[in-house]
Length: 609
Image (cartoon, rainbow, N blue to C red; front, side, top):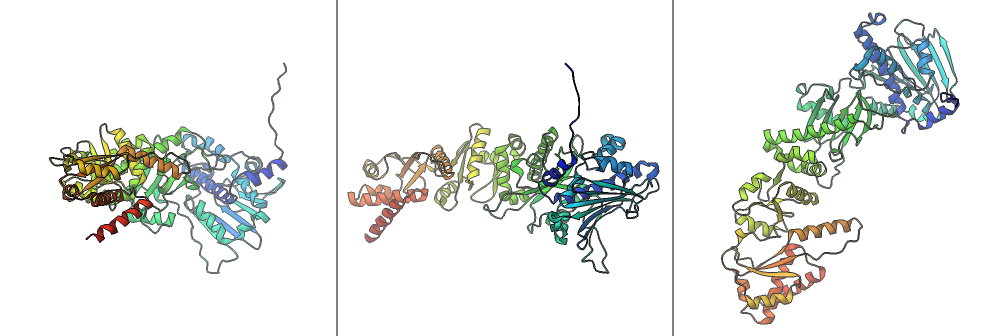
């Protein structure tokens, strides 16, 4: 069988419309690409100077710049650099052929494995053509550092081009890209819009960038760089002050609140990335927990919150990451699958965990002051990632209802003589104040778990610590609260059997607190299931109502309970209903009908005084 080999052909008049419409999801990215190419041109020349390349030997490694010039009268936007420039042969090779990257050729010739270290950005050779997303004609005016004749290349939106040599309009060295803006690109004749895009994508590029709106420039106008070429994340942490970090945070995120703390990441071999991550201050539990981690590629902004790099449970962080080895796709906006990405994500998780552990160990008092602002982050991270839990488990603390904080081992050690391996908690300090008071009178601490995620986190801790139980204060009566006795009073039992639901168990106990007539306890397992059903029902799912397992504990040491046996049946029943009503009210289990009846009975009792 005969075999024929060939190459796929693409006609320029077919590919250009695709480039104009589909190359980038956001049209404004064209300016990032053109300025990035200019930055590459400067970086290449700097590299040749450092290597002592013959033609570049006498060029000073200083004074490099990129100029972005807007001319509304001419309807042009121009990006000019004084970098490496191009010869006619290079223009024909890299500009006249789509997707042939000059950066890749340069890397292969001069860099080898050091390409990422030296910051050359371009990959695909497509970025230049993004100019046609906003322009109907593009001029390239270029003069090579080698002294070769200057070249002018002009191309229209159909892909037809002309090349002219010995062009007087070209810069002394470097390249000017002149974009003649089309109807679709006229929005970029707005000075504020161009500046916004430059601030978004180019604020930290490694070469000074100047912006000039010729129609607004005053005669005494003195341009100054609009970007920071040495952003904070490139500096050594030891050189940065607290005010440096706070100032950078305000500048990048426009957040008036100071961050709680930050993590300066400087990863080298086998990874290569830099960054600063901030824990923002959350004022209320209702405030958005969504953060913003800006991803940079050799100081060029790429995207916000790429989930492959930042673990989901850390997306509430704010910060910047500069990852020069990220495997980006053509648009530099989405990651291709790569083991390097996973390693970065794991490294970030480790650095966050190490920071939390360090704060706990070195400044526990300061850590406790910040705990309520970060606890949701920590708990969610532990629930989502076992490795993260293992790293931060020793730094997990709990707020005590009576004040102060405790770790789980500290709590268990302090309670082992009264209720070994049991952790009592409250969800609401107000509605459960009576129960909390009972525990505190006996010298027992109660921790506060006020949020839904707290009880889910408690279940994780039970699974990780064999034999440990988390019990809400109204789920079980501790032995430390009981005294001798607790005999059943038959006549009183008969009265309560008539007024409480059939599924409620009635028990007699003699409590040390003789002022308390009764308690209504709901078993922990039953209440957790009830909460789970309620949560699923709130998500729009119809779930069966599970009857709670409740126990009414009558305090046989309380005079009010003893006195019921001496009352006539009508009075005893009225008082018993009042006692049970107070118990259900404390548990938050009163319905509208039962509350109405409780109030009516209360008024009857008042009339008897």
